[in-house]
Length: 200
Image (cartoon, rainbow, N blue to C red; front, top):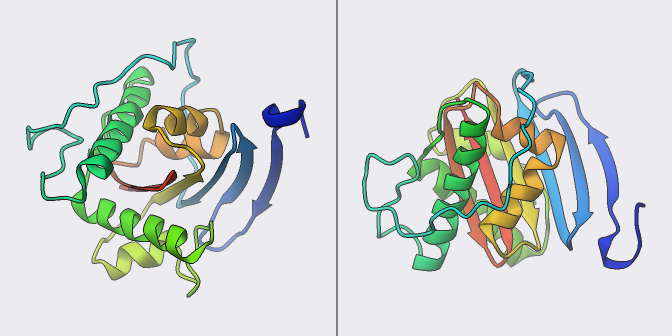
């Protein structure tokens, strides 16, 4: 435990060796984070000294060619706006590190949204659902084929800017965001819970 009162930071590390990489759980700013990875772990470039509080537009994205586009029919306006904002902020971090943007995929986001709502509605916080399925199984059952993938989850974070900042300050979460083998992303948001899924 580091610090005092609400600013304390508790860190635990758990590793498995089948489909999941090394995961960690943080309590910081009342947020809880976990990351898991599938496939090779690639070194990422060091983060430059940039101001992470730079604002990114949260206007609805209307250009279907934009990396973070979602159709207006996807979820509620609040969820869609949070998801698109988190996508833009994630891609800003990749741009800083000279990586191409991730494409926000509708099917990936639907899988992430289903998992985030399941966690809220059934009172748990984990990469695996009560049936034992992880992000790998959820994506495969939705018809997504991939060789490399990862997942970040968090709760207790109301804003996209805050959750991306917290993930970027944690090694395994940052590695998922900056993995140069990841090309696609899906994001789910519900009641301060977040899910990011990544694939090649």
